[in-house]
Structures are given as C-alpha cells and as structure tokens.
Amino acid sequence: MSTSRPNYPTIAQTVGHTPLVRLQRIPGAGNAERNNVILGKLEGNNPAGSVKDRPALSMFMRAQERGDISPGDTLIEATSGNTGIALAMVAAILGYKMILVMPENQTIERRQTMKAFGAELILTSQEGSMEFARDTALKMQKEGKGFVLDQFSNPDNPKAHYEGTGPEIWKDTQGRITHFISSMGTTGTIVGTSQFLKEKNKDIQIIGVQPEEGSQIPGIRKWPDAYLPKIYNAKNIDRIEYVSQQHAEDTARKLAKEEGIFSGASTGGGLYIALQIAKAHKNAVIVSICCDRGDRYLSSSLFSG
Image 1 (cartoon, rainbow, N blue to C red):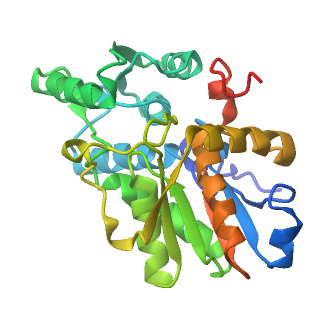
Image 2 (tube, one colour):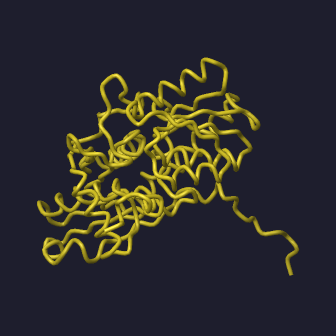
C-alpha cells in the first residue's frame, strides 16, 4: 500500500474547465431541423460563481509573479459585482486585503458575498455609475491607500481567456465551433477568447452583445469613449448585436424554467442573440457564455415573477 499523500487541489486550481452544455428545449424543433447546436458555457460553476474568477486569479497571480504585489498588501478595484466577488475570493485565498469600490445600486447578495470573503466595500452614488467608481479607485491609489489591479486596462484579464476559455471551447467542440457569443462589459472575455479562436479558425464568427439604448442589464454595458476599457480590441470581433433588457431578462427566466440553467440577465442577453443567429443558419455550432449564477439576483425583480 502506497504511503504517498494524494496531490489534492487547492480551490484556486478549480477555476476554469467549466462545462459546455447543449440547450435541449428552448431552441425548438426548427433549430433541430436546421441541424444547429446551441451550447452554454457554465461559468457559474467557477468557485466564486462567475466568469470573472478567471481574470481575477490571473491578475493576482501574474502581479505577484512580477513582484508588483505581495501577500499582506491592500488592493483596490472598481467593480459592478462579479469581478468584485472574484477578487475578494482570490484575496482571501492568497492573503491580501481587498477594497472594492462600486455603485450603491448593486444587489444585496453581491455585497454580502464580497463581505463574506473579507472585502471592504466603498459604495459610490448610483448617479455616478461605474465611471465614478473607477475614478474613485484611481484617486485612492494616488492617495497611497492601495494598489489598483485595474481590470479595464490589465492585459492579464484577456490573457486568462486566451489561455483558458478559448482552448476549453475549442477542445470541447472538437474544433467545430462556428459562432462565439459573449456579453460585453469589461470585454476581457470576448477579447481573449476571440483571439484564440480566430488563430485556430479565422472563419469562426465572434459576436459581442451590448444593451439597447435605455436598457440596464447587470454585467453588460456600452462605455462612453473616454471610459472604453483599454484592453478592448475590436480586431477579432465580427459584429456587435444589441439586446433589450426585456429580452435579456425573459431569456434568463426561460433558461431556468425550461433548461435548468440558473443564471443572470447578461447570460440571457447572450443566449437571446444566440437564438436569433440560429434561426438564420444551418449546421452551426453556437457557443454562448453563461456568465454567472442566478442566486446573486434573488433580491432583484429578475426572478420574482
């Protein structure tokens, strides 16, 4: 009998390698007749519950490797929710203090989850939105209150998807993917994943999803030019589609009731566009990112109907 101890993983090692699952009921008979497959990549299966676990771990680990930060340091980040939760988790794993700056209109579940991981929250006015939160975080850094990882301009953000999300999708579809769809917020997911997929097959269509004018969808947004994330690179993005808040929320509710996939409105927005694309194509393998878990929206009106 071997006396060597098994090599048990740490929780950080469970980030990524999320399931890619086929939608069964929502696409309908017409989609089957066109021989299309619509797949959702379940990023809510990451340990802190969203796709943002990937860049959070990447930004921490690479900054630590470069010597920019070391355990015990205080880090600051502006976040609209999922990134903050992910950063708070990684800070807890690696031994950092985390200060998160966010608009006051975020759901109570998100705020409580960040606090559970030990993060300090600074809430800015809803009117100032994320732009003001970003300015506040940078001001705090200038005042010497901590180090900003800056998900919006940090190349370690899309690198997490170039090295993880993209290769996983390529492998799990056996290279058959024809369309990749991602909601756009910080844009790291679509930038990194699209770079990898286009290197494998330039004919893969990359579609970004943004909210229609007047729609508010957590996790998806169109930035003013002055605040456009510096990591954003449109080179590999074939087109951008716009989704209404109503369609995004309705699709998120349908996903839960008809597919058993419990996720937020940003997931609903992406899959709504995936369904529209499927109506216009045959023999397509369409992959859409399911960004997070629905339990962090229970205090909102999303699932109250």
